[in-house]
Image (cartoon, rainbow, N blue to C red; front, side, top):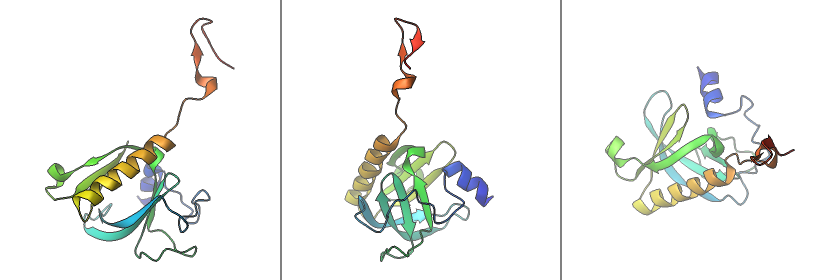
Length: 146
């Protein structure tokens, strides 16, 4: 089941494979969030780090080169990030959705929630797959550019 979760979320089997992202150095955003568990739906407070299109989470806020994330989600696999107070019936709640799963988070304040939604949303746009020149169709010539 764990490998299915990794496949669905794009998480790597290799716990040290973070695509060269130095999560301990100059992150785009960091902070405490409470995250709902994947299988057992309990709430756990985790330290989150957003950097280079990846959202990492840790048990402690002292993140170093030796730290090992408890999880990581490539934001390019995410479709939406939006408020979820109405779904969870909890203040400052938001959700992050992929094709196959939705993760729920609680921020400490409305401002923190909005800041996380904006930061993750910007990262989704920056890291989502864009059209390459070879995929542009020239309708005048009825063929793809090569």
